[in-house]
Image (cartoon, rainbow over all chains, first blue to last red; front, side, top):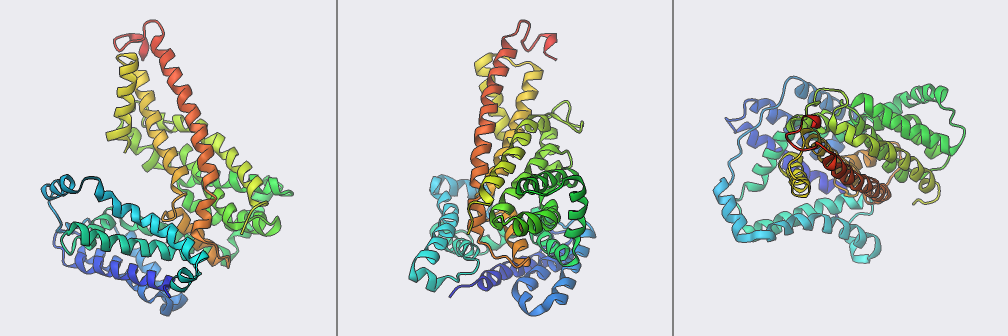
Length: 323
Length: 116
């Protein structure tokens, strides 16, 4: 049976390859730091289950130290030339999209098969089926693309490394913030923040709790510039203890819509520079340096309407439907 | 996405419909193009499972002892995506009319001083 552990092993091997290739790339100005960074991620993916809480914690701190000690360099992976790519595009045309489309198809198809057929349930573990199917989809699409288009053998890892180098440590943000949320829960930070918010908004009914959670997500996101950072704090403070546990909301629905309420905040804030300030600069808007530039002003009405829409959706869906 | 693709297309469409654009109209169209790109991305991306926010939600809940399927979380992002499509789509239709009205106003052309 394929379990999530197998997906971790596949991902770990990929990061291990990034690490080795970075180490051997003289064009990467920070080759040793990059190799160490991707290598530590590979270590946690491959052996995380054996490292224990303390080992993984030290590993995460090491990652943060490496990430904070300066920008990671971008390597120069040896892959195909632009001419080769044009020739390949002219030859295969839209068929090039087929492997990319296979990934979501296998991910959703695999999930449904595992839930509803005996063969699927035998093949794929019932725990985190979607993520396993997603990994399976990536592997199948990779094999298909390799057999079909015959790129250089090292192309997948080299192109993957190019992508990872350009994203940098931000690629780890979701995982890091999920563990930050776990620390908040363990340290009862949620309780403290929740008490503070309760002084402003009395959460005496399900609707008031939903209102406080969504408004808190949006406000905190406006300050932090990132809904991912607001999510663990607000969900530990209000989402889980009050909306889910006290009033009985469905956790999947509450979190999904809560995150989207946070995105409304992202649309309103100049702190979300990569979404709201960078495009204003690229488009040479005359008010690009004002805190309420043309991009944010264009987004503001939709963001406000969507914030209230999310509150209503959460209120009407989370207490009625669920797993 | 917005700089090479959406903004030039929107500007081109407006120019072919209303003639040369005033600077004000041009920058408003660019701002709306960037905003629409963001709104489509934000409220659309969670429908797909392999996205950071879904991984964060699933990971956070697992730490809290609640097990949810990624597919289940992304399913509940669909209602918001539909509402966002309707809300922003309606706003874009109104925006089109606004641009048309601005451009039809006397003195509104690329050379006119009033455009700024």
